[in-house]
Image 1: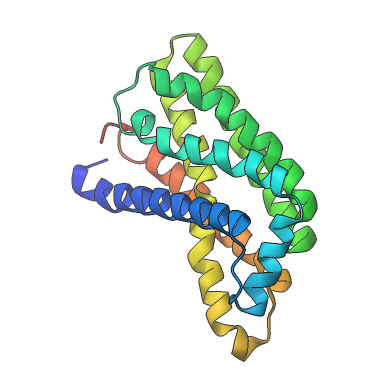
Image 2: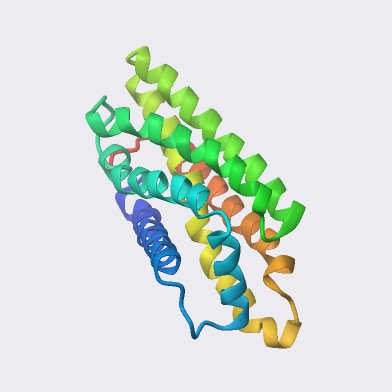
Length: 208
């Protein structure tokens, strides 16, 4: 892919990282210092996560580490490095706890179905990356790692989608329980499709 064509993708990648980090920090603060002046919708969401705080922490802290390490893998030439080796166990923890978190899905079965599908795609991609890495097939390992990272960052893409639903809820009457599942499907689908377009375009060279 030509460098000029890659720039929007790289920009979107960094935006997703910033959003994902901000989401984790906000959740950590909400768990440690529950806000007293939050709107009823946000207060209800905070209460849901607070009701299983240990599981939430077991999910978002490894996810934060995974996201922060990912640039050292995605934006480097194909090779094996310490960051890549750390991604695999971190990703496994993130994936397993995501399944557990889906039990408490705010958006019910629609959100849960999105988690089950895209989290499975994430874990399969991570496992394929691990196998290729063990065989010293660095280019293939890199491609599957990119898939895994971009799919995981779908959680960041869901945030602006949710923002639209929150902003228009006074007109639509939709509650988080009604639109969270839709937002998950939209956000993760965007990232999954983008990852495939990135990998399949041009000569499939991933050097940024």
